Length: 71
Image (cartoon, rainbow, N blue to C red):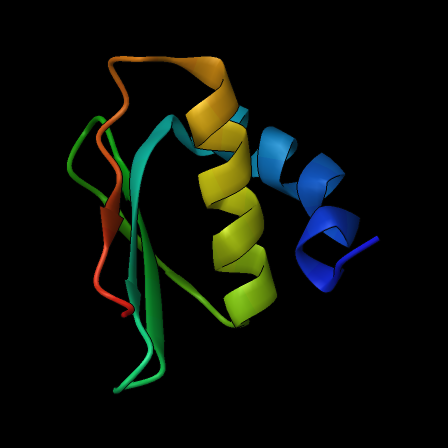
C-alpha cells in the first residue's frame, strides 16, 4: 500500500465535508491545494494527502476537474 492510499479514508471524508472538486499540486513550490465548489481553497500539508484526494476524485465523477501541475 502506498502512502497516498493510507490517506484514502481521510480524503473521502475531506471531499464530502468540504465539497472539493479539484486538487492543485505544485511540486516545485511544495504547495498542495484543494478547491471546493464554493470557491474556497484549502491548503494541504502533505503530498500524500493531495495524491489521495486526486485518487478519490478520479474515481467519483467524470465532471470533476483535476489540475496537476507536477511533472
